Image (tube, rainbow, N blue to C red; front, side, top):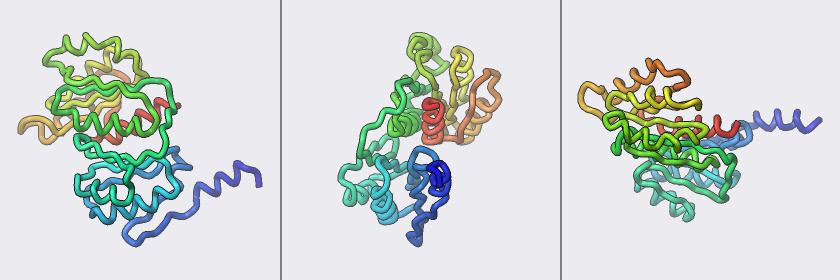
Length: 231
C-alpha cells in the first residue's frame, strides 16, 4: 500500500492495556503530542507505571496536577523528570524541540492567578513554543497592561488568566488582532462562586476573538494555544 494509506492504518492501532489504564501510544502520531497524564486521583505507583510504559515510545511527557509525592515516585523511574511545584506539573523531556518561532503570551490579572498561568506556559513550552510571561496586569491598575502592550501585540496567540470578575480577557480582546484564549480561575471572594463569575464574564465577552476554557484549566489553554501557534 502507499505510505499515506499505511499511516491511516497506524493511527488506529490499539492501546496498551495496563489493567488500571489504557495507554494511547499512538496519540503522538494522530495529534502531534503524546498523551498527557492527569495525575490527580491516581496513586503515585500508577503514575510511575504509566511513565515507565510511555517513555519507551515518546520523547516528551507531561504530567499535570501532580503532587510532590507523585513526583518523587516518578523520579525513581525517570530521574530526568523536572517538577514545577507552582504549576503542579512534571516534565520528562528527552529532547528540546522548537516547533514555532512565533510567541505565545501568557497574561495574568493578578499574582494569585500565576499557578494556573504557569500550567499553561509550561504546557506550551513543552509542546515546542516560546512563551512570554506577563503577570499582574489586571484591570484594577490598567495602566500596567498598557505599559506592556508592545509585548502583548508581538505575540501570535494570547492566553489571559483571570479570577475575580474575569474582565481582563475582554480588555485584551479589544486591543489586539490575535486570538485570545481566556482562562477563568477560582480566585475570588464568595460571590465569585469558585470561578463561575469569571467564566460567565468571559463567555459573555463583547470583544471578538475571545475563546474560553474551563475554570483553572491552564493545560487546556496551553495546548490550544500551541495548536494555533503551529498551524
